[in-house]
Length: 420
Image (cartoon, rainbow, N blue to C red):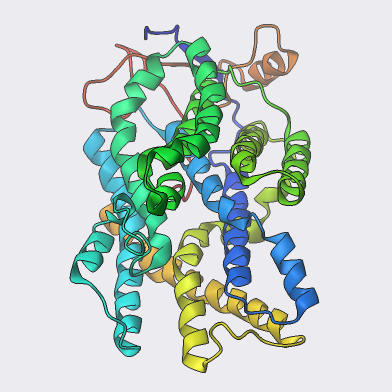
């Protein structure tokens, strides 16, 4: 791969420094996962109510897929020149580990309360976020079951600083080839799973970090294209319609072998369109203050929700029995509210202060808008309003760094709040 010319950007004073729409969308993804687990736990016994939640959240597990695509996008988008690998890794550990350790300890306490057997080796794997590499049934879901996705994210974080310099130097044609190839590789996993023992096929397609990294790299490549002004995708309204249509079609008619690929593409279109709407100041329904707050606590919500629901249901003796009539939906809503309260507390008293204490400080940077195509009237108008508000995005490789720069050139990138 060879270097590409430096990409210019327009940086009007009115451009937002954050991407709040992506934060709001995080809550939608977390809600999908919550609904899926509420359905599979059979909390609702009434057949009509149960059929409704089953059909609504049948594909809710793909909310994790959204998180992986989003993670790749925002980490490439927010990478800054001069960030060392150590700085990047320290920031990511400060983000995920405090909440993870709290829930790991809470899950062990619950296991002790119910006299559940705990294998020390499984507990050690879990606390070190290595469990997703273990194909043995039950091990990758050990302790706090949902933390398997953090094990995958941890692998992504280790790889990104090593791969980002190559991504920065890649030609646009290669990046677009990856945008097409990565969903096809996700599709190819279904025949490829027959290469592993049958007992390990779920682990291979759904858990194995290198396999799940395909979604992460899809978001990363799209972010690089958008930063260069080379991304060509639908607007937020069209992307949302495409996603809803894909979701309905996948839930009703499309086989699982196909909908994982289709949803990865649909999620990518929504993410890129929402990011573009934010940096250009266009309308977005996802940046309202309540949704942004919900998105900020979504990481904590995701970590607590399964442990809370299973613990309460076991404690009350209702595990696997379900609640009849209106009580089933009421219990689901009650769990939603309880988990939100606990997530808010965890975010306020663990996640936020530990990020401030452990993460290295990063200076505030002004926001940017990715470069427009030559002759784009909107870009010319923004440049005229912003005066000489231009910067050159450096594409050289800084040795050992997450970002990149050329001599005498310093690139600037938009920051993103609450990115895993």
